[in-house]
Length: 289
Ligand code: ADP
Ligand code: ZN
Image (cartoon, rainbow, N blue to C red; front, side):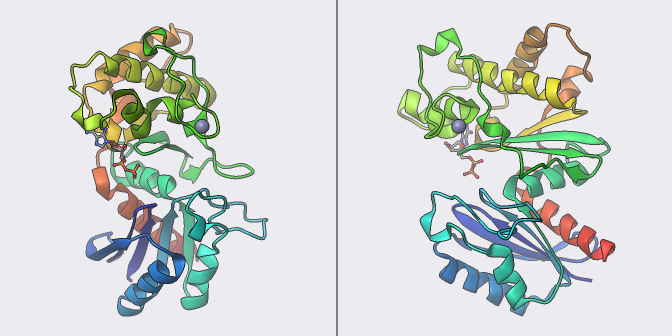
């Protein structure tokens, strides 16, 4: 059996093929331009590398409401060429195989759940803090989802008084979690990229405060077994002890949680999480047939 994966990001698409043990046999990437151009490359790729099922993780927002007419569409994206694009429908029109379609964040979370930092845990919360903030909650193997997928990156937080009234950069909410803590918010404060800021800079305490608040909220709402962080900003690994200490302080012993250094953790698969998760979801869909 051959499995396929598509990690459709806002800047690049990655396509990959594996055997049924998720050993990646081939992988290729191309820039995200227009659906006409980029999807033509996807179709060619899987014509040249036939597979039995494909797991797709797409940038979004995407429609995941199975009862809606636009299930499998990219919906209200600022990337206008992709707005209301029927991603899943286009794949189905080209290949008569089963698909698993979900968000880019969900596939990465699934990879960490099955083969990364969340391995062996039942309920995981995964956050990515990069160009934006995304989240995925997996409860006993299933993605948490209601009317559509959660958007926990945009939860509202208390401003840190050391942050000099920073207004945030989210076009919708200003100082939501993403507006305060994602890469572009850091860049807005400093006029340079996050990786150019010294790990000992006092700013990281402020960043850790926001991330800890998000962990407190998520702990109170979801009670996960582990909270896993990935994305470019989290490459600042000095943040982890800062977040852990701040989390313990803010939660103030209200509820219990697993041992803190094993509770708030960095990803284990790094950049491979998305493709790994998409391949595993392709395998799941074949096994369920
Ligand atoms: P994306 O979210 O676009 O998929 P990333 O997760 O790599 O991609 O996030 C990119 C963002 O993370 C950019 O804003 C970048 O400046 C920031 N970033 C990347 N590396 C670091 C780092 N080592 N420290 C702080 N910020 C970083
Ligand atoms: Zn927002």
